[in-house]
Amino acid sequence: MFTKIFGKKKLKEDKLANIFVNFILQTVDECFSDIVGIIKESPEFIQTPDVEESNDSKFLLIVIAANLKEIPKHLEAHQDNRIINLVITKLCGVFDVDFDKLEGTLREYQSYLSRVNHPSNNNLYAMSKAVFFKYDLGKYQEDYFKNMNSPNPLFLKRLDEAMKLFLFNWSDTKENHQIVQ
Image 1 (tube, rainbow, N blue to C red):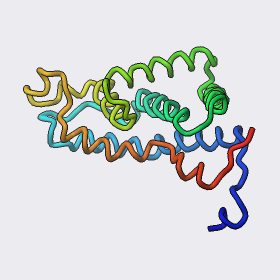
Image 2 (spheres, helix red, strand yellow):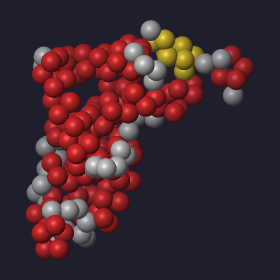
Image 3 (cartoon, rainbow, N blue to C red):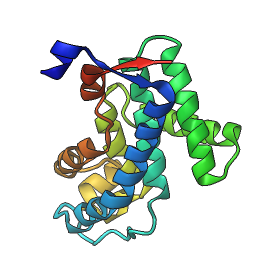
């Protein structure tokens, strides 16, 4: 309502990058244990998967890569590149890693997301499939799905619902803010 009266609040790209990074890090930190719970309690597995709450690095990279893939869908040309570079720069400070190394790793994960979910372009589904394959969950399934090296669709559907929590809310951000350089 206030945006209709006063207009959108300006949000600088640097501040948006901070919000984006903090959202991802906080959400993964607070909610990865829920993902582990979903995995361990899934009735589709005949053996409880060996996934530990402390082993969140692959999951964090999946979430970051998927969220970075979403940016060009919501921002204008060049602005998306600036935001992506700002985000990676901020993550380099958090993880104490070189920009080129982190960017390369994230590109590899983005490519992996595209491959495991081909031909679909749905990032949410790609995230779920990437979790399935990166954590080698296929070996815990019944023989039918294990031999196909494919996730049980019931498990994927449950994981898809949970993965929604890890995608940055671009529609709300764009609805309430004017993103400026």
